[in-house]
Length: 129
View 1 (cartoon, one colour):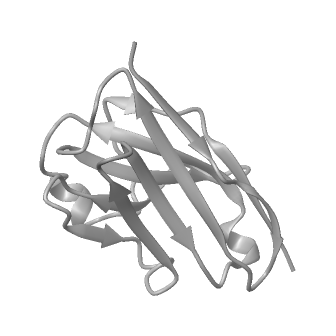
View 2 (tube, helix red, strand yellow):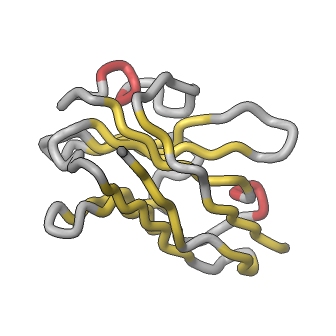
View 3 (cartoon, helix red, strand yellow):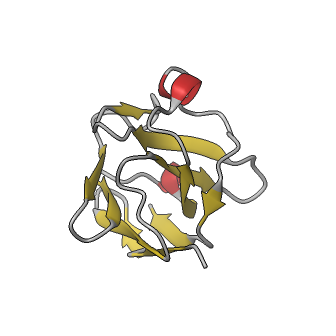
């Protein structure tokens, strides 16, 4: 059974930092396209950052320079380091996997919603002003 489990969400003040983790079990996705998405209340889900199997990364314009996606293949874990957080970053954050080494068009238009093959259940991030 494939599982993606996110952790690390919480409530912080604007300007603070959080690091989200996504651990996979049941299979390893180190060589596949992995991404972070978020969905704010009343809004559509959007892509935040992607990392391809070879490690190439892409970010939504809204988080460039503030968020960093990374992975630790030895731990089967995907990370999202979030710095300089803003109230508009408040959302449920999801990790997802596409069974492909490349992320394709997701690397060009990051902030759209995309079909992925596996999803976690999400972790809530709340940023207060």
